[in-house]
Image (tube, rainbow, N blue to C red; front, side):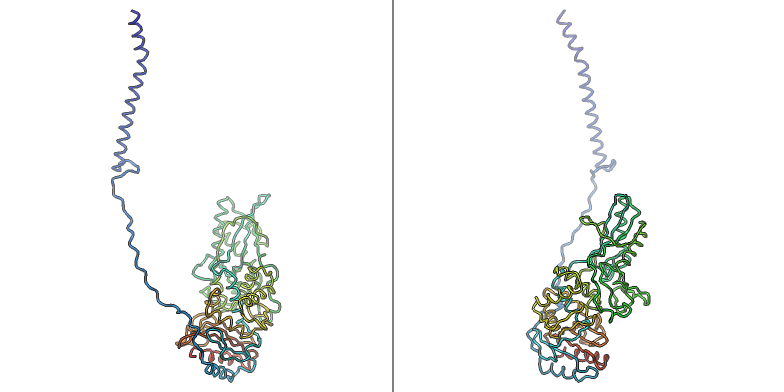
Length: 487
């Protein structure tokens, strides 16, 4: 009896466990069945999921095309081809006898290696006008990274009193636009409208819609205008103080119609005398356009150190800005390149150190600077003097380009672009000249290099001071230069 009772107790004690086991097993079978059904449904796109029997479209990547050989844009310079010295002297003599030139002139013609084959008073320093810009361009292109840009940035300062301040800081882009960035042009390549839009987006992400506005224009110190420049700067149309930021070079367009092409600088409107403040004022308006209220400012201030910028825009590369400067003979941008050169060389932060930095760079590159005097970096200020020997040696370097390629490529091309567009030739010789013009009340000058019709190259420079007739002297220079391509 005892054994039967024990067996019955054992069966009763384990009965619940057996039922649980069966329940679990049944549930597992049901779950597997459900999952299997879902997988089938997924495969046939009845239920959502990653499985499918549909075909997948494959991206067809064509085989690469064969590279095509480009046409020859410029052949190697053959500097060894001699220049007929007697023919060059004949050109010089004919120029000397031309109406309006007078007696105070220097002229030199050199072969592709820089050897002067004909000259008149080549070593006498004379006032060069804007041909002085070729010296500044060469020095800057030798010193600076010409592929770099000048950036304009915005920063945020959050004060202890919960005030929010935006600081606008520039690096020297004086060709900002007042609207969106325009990568198809040099003037306006970076836009304050674009910078304001990016700044507003960053502020709104932080829940900020009201700010004070400062602008940091401190990079170039206090000495920004050459002494005596006012003599040749009537109504402030030809020079304004270099600035870390400016809209359209500081042109105000209050008395002239602004050209549709932003890179057209053939006119000379009055220039702003507070370009950085004007740029900051424009920036404040663009912030408002993007939903940010400026409650105070803009006023001068300092950007925070060690802080990342909220937003930034970049100028065209420096080589393009240099081409703009040379082809349009922009005096302020020439001084700007002088200042950037001085700062890069750690030479100082003044007009004097700008000109010294240019002269020192030329000398270090083996260019004869005897008699060189630079009142500024543009040739606008009275007091500058340079010999055509120095101008010739810069042009000889331009023929081979090398490290100063931007200074050579930026020169004006008669018949095509720049201040010499309507100078020298208007026929089949267009494109053979790369030149820089110079013109003041008592000065006309021209320096450049020439691809000769019969092969080879040459360089030349001419300065006429106190001409008997300014317009006749300019025409005499045009006639003389046109003959050089035939040498």
